[in-house]
Amino acid sequence: MPTPVPPSYADVEAAAAVLEGRAHRTPVLRSRRLDELAGCEVHLKAEHLQRVGAFKFRGALTALSAFDERQRRGGVIAFSSGNHAQAIALAAAEIGIRAVIVMPHDAPALKVAATQGYGAEVVRYDRYTQDREQIAAELAADRGMTVVPPYDHPQVIAGQGTVVKELLEDAGPLDVVVTPLGGGGLLSGSILSARALAPHARVYAVEPAAGDDGRQSLRQGRIVTIDTPRTLADGAQTTHLGQLTFPIIADGVTDIVTATDDQLVETMRVMAGVLKQVVEPTGVLALAAVLSGAVPDTAGRRVGVVLSGGNIDLTRFAELVGAP
Image (cartoon, rainbow, N blue to C red):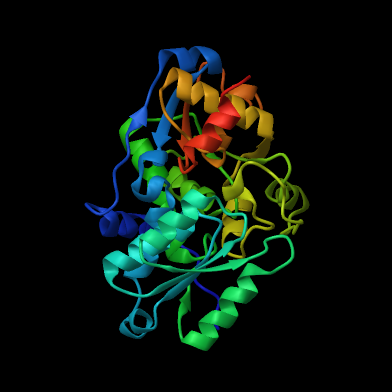
């Protein structure tokens, strides 16, 4: 199979045209109190208010819209702990193709139920002992389906790039852009948009402290693979960056920093208490690092922060944020 061509900002623009009227143009949230806590002017791109509750719908719909007739007849298979799963399931339902999603046994019940609710078949696996990519590849070969991975795919990257494209268009010039980092689809697309629309802006990414494969990869100049990290940020429990995402990240990111689970919970409290918004642990990775000071040179600056998702069971949310 030929190596996919890396996406460009032109692909992000094409994705924006595909998504217009089909994905939400999510708001940019502002809070004077949040600015005081962060010591800078924070512009929050509210992707937890996106369809399926996460930015992933952008990449999923962009990728499936590019399917040819043979691929549409065969259907799509994906692997995900939740948000990409829901996104592929909904996009497939809207386009009218079959979807099979490989999901871990410990995926949040809310995300599994939503994925099935959109009409997708769910195949479960153990994320700590089994290889989800191998399972998906074998199922795709058996059933004649096309695999759409959660991040290492040109149309997925292009679709995710529309997040920061909109952020920069709506918020105006930014000095710093901060995104969560799992496999790198959102970050790669963000770099493409920032480079085109705000070339002087510094771009930072934030990983869970328990799983900093991206930071290690950046430092070592190669893709580093780690064991599946144990973190509240289930959407960033990836073990390595992608063959497409890593070169874009290595060339364009200013740095990669981390946030602890405790910092994620405290930031969820801030979002609920100050902005009255429910955001999942992965969704607050970027903001947690800004509030903790892990992202440098933000003092007094205009800082764009991506809130990537809000899919968390309310009982679990209450358990996490209820008691300091």
